[in-house]
Image (cartoon, rainbow, N blue to C red; front, side, top):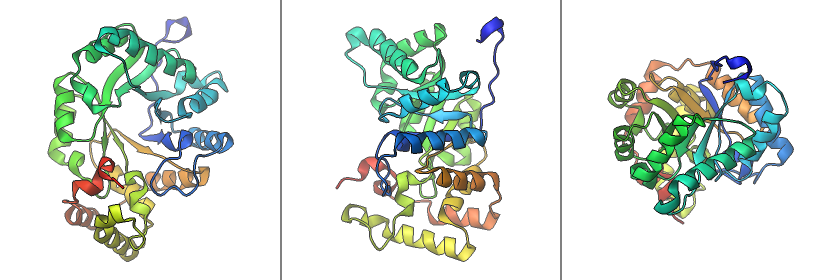
Length: 306
């Protein structure tokens, strides 16, 4: 609600800027380390200039919320137009769960400089079944402190639990190697349940960009898949980042796609790939066929033990 009592209908861009790279030394292929404040703000401004109005952050992403807050406070109309996704940081015991959840939300709101969060997601899959946390989220929605609540999940089982618990937003991983959440059947189920679907990890936290000949030992299993991926890119004369963006952008039923970037130039390149959405059908089908059964040890970063 904005001044004068008018309800603001925000334009929510399909492309979302993921900000983990802005506040952390993030990504398995990151050779730059943590960005400077100036570099991070430049990426945020580049997103905004290109009509990206949705930003994904979290307390766990280092200084990400503060950086977004600085940007929001820099223009008087930004808060009215921007859509923020943030996550619930680690909470305390069940005895003070409502207070803990509320305090965590208010800390995020203070850092972001906003009066309301559009999407508040659970960051820890273990919280999805916690009735105290779910009730706390419902209270926050009733109090108009959040618009919707949901969960950032890793597995189909977690998705089923979240849907059964009444979550309206799911943030799921999907990319050239990970097709679990983008099957037509599952996407249709999400739509029937009126679930808003955000796809994250479209570059598999940078794994897709690693040289298959220089993989660390704990990721050696990915070598044949990365080798085949490079072969496909060469055959079709398409840069890997472009193929990764276009593949997800051509999945019907995906509401929003998260992309991160380590520079404004990199973000601009990803935006260009998103806008030129044409992907030859034979290429899409080849990707689906070749990478339909990539092992969990590769597609789930939680398995990347050293």
